[in-house]
Image (tube, rainbow, N blue to C red; front, side, top):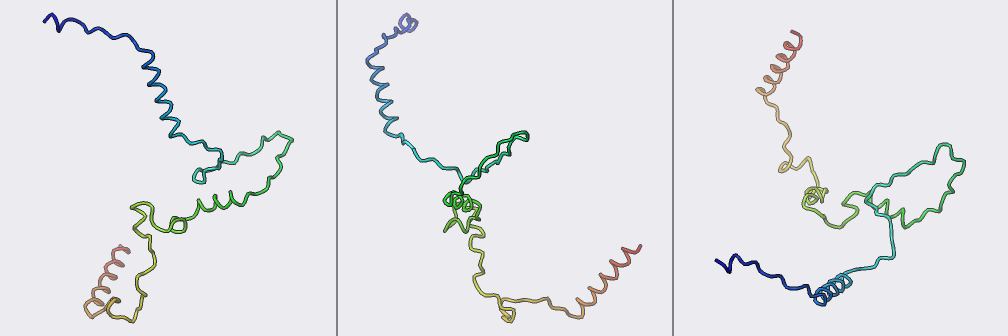
Length: 138
């Protein structure tokens, strides 16, 4: 019990060892860093155009339009099927190919089932119309 109650003594701080750890950490960070020198506007973020101050006498000169910038902005507003060659998410897979697989032919009896009317369906149709008219009037 005496050994368990005795507190463990701390070792003194080794500054050389801590400095070596710090140097190793900085070297790891520098290996994975990339320096970006070219910046552009994110085309997916909405731009908020601000108007001039109402009492300002100075007007801003119109700058030249950058065709590369306009192409990026217009490309960001396209629908996904025009932006990408294949779906980017699972939910885009549904409806990605919107063209019909076969040409629709109304004369083909295998794929076209028009509404058929017989004597019974004509009679019930007239009965329902009569019932709806009497309910609407009364």
